[in-house]
Amino acid sequence: LKIKYPTKIHLLRGNHEDKWINNAFGFAEECNTRLNEDPGEPESVFNRGNELFDWLPLAAIIEDKIVCLHGGIGSTLASLEQIEAIQRPLEVIHEVSTPEQQLVVDILWSDPTDNDQELGIQPNFIRDPNGTGNIVKFGPDRVKQFLENNGMSIILRAHECVMDGFERFAAGQLITVFSATDYCGRHKNAGAVLDITKQSEIIPKLIYPLNNAEHN
Image (cartoon, rainbow, N blue to C red):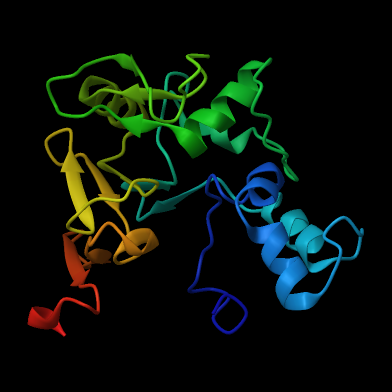
C-alpha cells in the first residue's frame, strides 16, 4: 500500500520494528522457514527488512492538532522538537545509557496509566518485570501538559490490545487504537480503525472477530 499510494500511506515505527525483538519473537524463524534463508546473511530478507525499520519515522502530526506515535510519551518526551532531533537510521537500544536512548524507548514502549486517577510516572511491571525503570506508564497530567506545551489536541497511539479496538484516556485527550482482532487467537477483542473527519472529529470503525457469529 505504501508503494501504491506513497503520499497517502504513512508508516510509523513501533516496538516490533526492531532487530532484537524480531530475532526473539518469530520473524527470523519465519524467514528461515518460509524462505529457506539464513537470517544472519547480510542480504537476507530479515536483515533488509530490519534495515528498513531503522529508517521509519517515530511520529506523525495530522492537521497540526493530532500527534501519532506507537507507545507514548513516557517520562522524557516533552516536545516534538525532541523527536525531530533524533537521527535515522536508528537502532533501538534496550539497555538504556543515554537520554536519547531513553526517549526512543519512551516513544516505542511506554503506556498510559491504568486510569485517569493515576497521575505522574508509574512503574510498568508487565513490560519491565525486572524493574529497570526504562519502560514506564504516564498519567493523564503528563498527557495534558505535553499537549499544552506543543499546541496539540490529541495523542493517538497503539501498542496495547484493548477489548473494543479503541480506548480513551486523559478525558479523551489520548486514544489507543488496536486493529488486530482476537489478538494472538485468545483475547476475543474487537479491532478498530479511526476515521478523522474534516472537522477533526474522530470516529471509530469497529472490526469484530470472525468467530463472533453475531457480527459476521
